[in-house]
Length: 269
Image 1 (tube, rainbow, N blue to C red):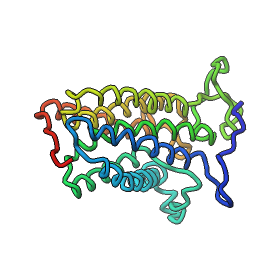
Image 2: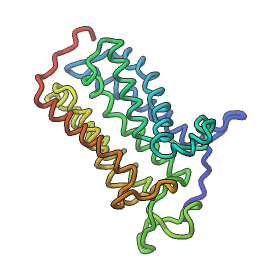
Image 3: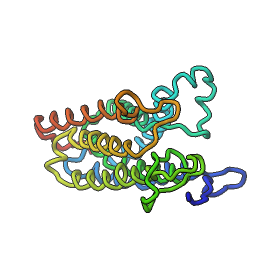
């Protein structure tokens, strides 16, 4: 049985701090110093102050992109009929693919504004994104949401979720936390530690896009599709469809990066 865990982590006076919000806050706190260190590694691309400034843009990109992505990709007709519900974020509903687009736009605007190489700066930011992905999936599990498909009762870790009916299901949130979060983070940190990779602007960004697309597509085989969408033609899910352009973009970026000349040190940082 799913453990009875309150979705509220703690209270500050009359305000309830939920695990999902806490996951976002902790993610940014952990990721910020790592991103600062990555940006200072040779060839340096940005100052620690610029990384601090980008945090505001990143938060906006994640929140606005994630929410609008969910509205457009998963429930457009529902929100078209009840547009005021778009602002009811406490009811849940965030899309990683929308959040990724939001962060990409934030990176592009911030890089242009500060005259930083867009791909080089992106390469130093994306390695820390799996921290948020992993903690976010853990929060999904605590909330008892986004559970998996029915599983064999013989599966030792199969669980009966409160809102998933009486059948045992895959705890797919934990699968995603381990693959999209922990595994992808390890891959990105190992790759970003190598100067030969850092010198080719865009490779780490492409690796992240491709790696996430693989991890998410794999986990979708165990995750129950959204009830309002279900399975698409051929038994694929919306999550898998959205991963196709992400994987293609990732492969294209890695190929472009390897064919490009190594970047030079930004002397202004």
